[in-house]
Length: 357
Ligand SMILES: *Cc1c(COP(=O)(O)O)cnc(C)c1O
Image (cartoon, rainbow, N blue to C red):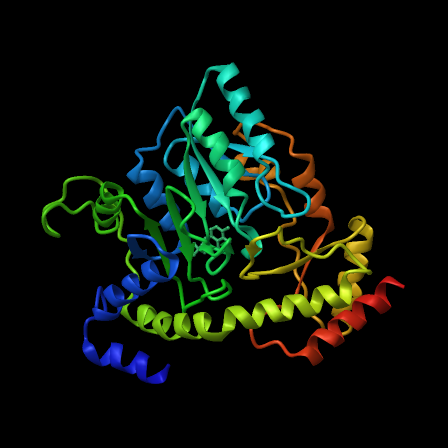
């Protein structure tokens, strides 16, 4: 890692240096798509996708109610309207049946045009793309896969970030593959969209940098971050992804009779951005978190508030999403990373058992 960073610095090509192009090719190959375009972060990656599709005022973009703020934030930024959709209790991911209901409702109201569904691979688990694709095809929606937490996950061996018409990921340090700062990427098989995104990420460039044919952004991945990611991607593919899956298996074995442990559907593989348990109610969840804290064990509530209740979205259409709202009151994410030991997992699980007795 030290050598990779120092080589990148010594090259002097701090922006769009050789490691950036190399990494994009490696990421595209790993995911199994034609084009990978790196960018500054996972939020910009989503914005670049919406720009490539010319999403704007009057367009409805369907977003799960239980996700990180970015998945929805990018929608009003383009002038479009986010419509929140409920999630599945067991997988935390968007509920295709509720997506269909939400699209029908938008069509019945006749004010907005349904355009895109943002399918989030929450906590590392790919969304149910077979069911989502059926609804998307029925109504002519494009699928934007927000794989910020999902990189490395798969369904029947097909990798995350290959399911959406466009997919995005984030290399924020806490994600399955993190760099030493901010970073992101966009994936697609579509040549036309890839060319548009390449233009949008560098000020809407045309034939060259000082020929500007559209209003774009400055959203590039630094050469140093690309060099870091080349090292991290190798470790991730060779052993880190297997290690987090082994750790998740150990947690589930020790906790399955104590709390509701994560459910991974048949054929699916998670990259375990988080290992998230469900408790009975908010009182039990909060008491458990307090006990863990007293024992020196960190835990986090991802996420305490559903999107439809965020102050920033107070002007957006209000869809009640009972499952997402309930989950916000009951979930707790435990310490999780590829280098966690069985001893640490035992300590965490014993503390949970003692607290819930
Ligand atoms: C982290 C995250 C993002 C945004 O990524 P950044 O690199 O932090 O901008 C988007 N969506 C989800 C689901 C995320 O977890």
